[in-house]
Image: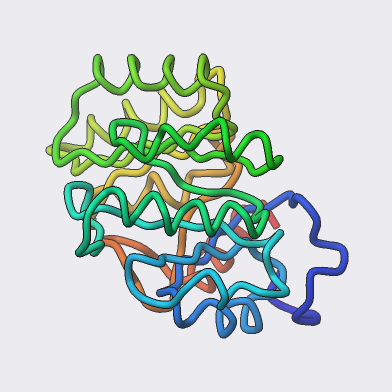
Length: 222
């Protein structure tokens, strides 16, 4: 899946199996290196929407707040203003934390035909909360629900994969760290639209795209 040109030709709206997470200033590099994959532009880690020119429709834009393990250093109004600039580019997706004020931008994104990934990142497992937020994602018109937790045991990983497989909305369910690696590799088996990987390893337990592809080929998934 990593062979080919660097442009958007033939790429419109997917389908995708891997979303390559990149610091904002590395997005074009990631797009060139992985021309068959969706690219997540982590603008909380630097760069600007202008860095995405020419690859907008194969890009997900994320500006992660510190409360959910991101690196955004300024206020919510500044973050919303930057996300509005990002939405104006008409990317494939924007990631909006479903429990934050930035989620108010969901209607603006949908009006521009930008897919919304409604995300939540928890330091523990709270299944009632996750189910409640999943229902909110559905009712608000999100395209994908993303749930990330720090697992306390392998049972949390099993529950996350079960929740993902049975979700009524396309879902990306991830457990962090070495214990949760299986939730990333099992993404195609539990009907996730994609999972995240990065040569920069921006999250605990995050594999590289090459590692995902090697395992998926051995499972006859590619």
